[in-house]
Length: 89
Image (cartoon, rainbow, N blue to C red):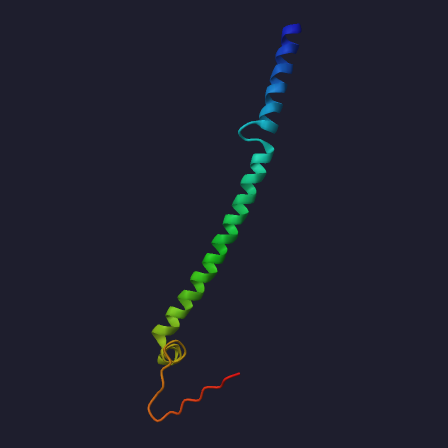
C-alpha cells in the first residue's frame, strides 16, 4: 500500500511540474496566445490594406476619372487650356 501511495504522490508531483514548469506550461501557453493575438491583428491589418488596394485597382480599371485624378495628384498633370495656381501657406 505504501508503494502505491508513493507512486501516486510521485505522479502528482510529476504532473504538477509539467503543468507549471514543463514544455506546455501555463505561462508558455499564455505567451503563445499573446503571440497568436498579435499575429491575428497583423493579419487583419494586412487584409484591410489588401482590400483597400483591391478597391483602388477596381476603381482604376473602371474609370478614367480615377486615372486622371492620380495623374494630377501624383504627377502634376495639367490639361491644355488650364491655368495652374499654386497656393502657398
